Length: 199
Image 1 (cartoon, rainbow, N blue to C red):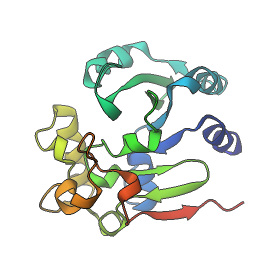
Image 2 (cartoon, rainbow, N blue to C red):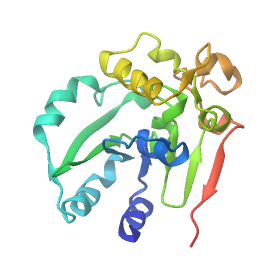
Image 3 (cartoon, helix red, strand yellow):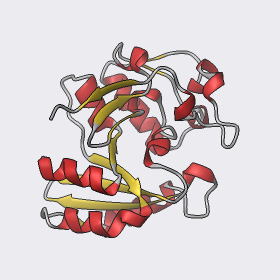
Image 4 (cartoon, rainbow, N blue to C red):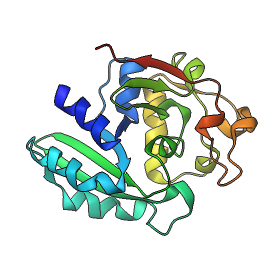
């Protein structure tokens, strides 16, 4: 664990999605994989770290889901590269963010507020704690007409006991909406909960 935390810090990576939700709102379910977001320019050393712990690149999964994700030419923070690694039944999804966007900004493109949480090796962040700790979520405006994968993810939340609040997160926090791309701007949020990792 210490090596993993050190790698997150060294390479500017964050852990997000359902893994972090399972930590903050524990239930009788376990996340199926580990989602890590990091800058594209640290991809080689981080992948070397992953390989050193027995993981191998899963080309089949990557190719299967390649069209689910935006390409390098996608606008603003949509732009990233996806790679999948496996070690037996354990799976890691890596999303490499293209400069100048930051990994934490990518979290705010996720389908709902329930998975807009992350750990950067220094602290755990919950961007919408009032909803998350109460077992509620609001959808991202840009996922109101979602893909089949997103629908499945939302249904998982409901199956785990989460309930949806009416309206998108952009409607609830209009003052935090980015004028550049319409997603929530983390620097404008005043709701962020932070818990530092003890030494």
